[in-house]
Image 1 (cartoon, rainbow, N blue to C red):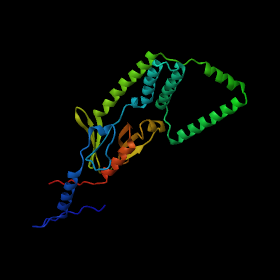
Image 2: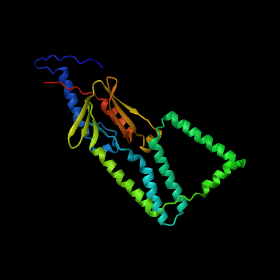
Image 3: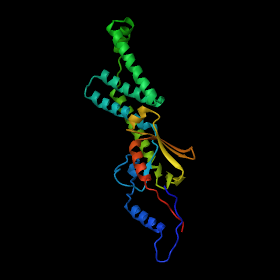
Image 4: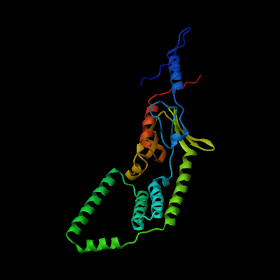
Length: 261
């Protein structure tokens, strides 16, 4: 980008800066006003927006598989579906969510974990085919487990997760970032502006600390704001971050220059 040239005022002649201001004013009038609902899902990425909203969500959002599984199992058990099968489904969903919380599987670790599970599954299959006693006894022990929950437990746990999920979803409405072409501003309601980072000299990058979290938040991750090679803001657990990055990159493609009169 070329360095700005100091304007020279000439009577009866429009300066280059004035032309730029006129062009920028026309562009600003065409920008769409962002919606507060964009905090949850960035819509309409086809047009330029005045700002892009980004917020950090609490980790309860990762428990939506367990919430839906327990509520569904409660309904199915009330319809006399096999309680043992439903118990295994609910336990597997809860175990998966706990695994997401306690581990951080980056791309390399995730690949190693998948290969380990694949090799372990093949070894168990071969051992069972060869009638290895230890594997047979282990299979009989697992099959003898009675993994059941009452219908009330399904609805109680699913209901608690539903309430906590609702409270967690309300939090981003009060604590969010507004990315504009000239600055990145943190809002903490009801007090308003809490922190402002100038666009000049700042970079916005996306990190994926955990593949499972990426999948559960539909392309989510962590958004980092760096200035002078230092992290000044870290926005974690951002759902649909892939779509948001497209909107941010599109918005920052237009550089605004503000001048003092």
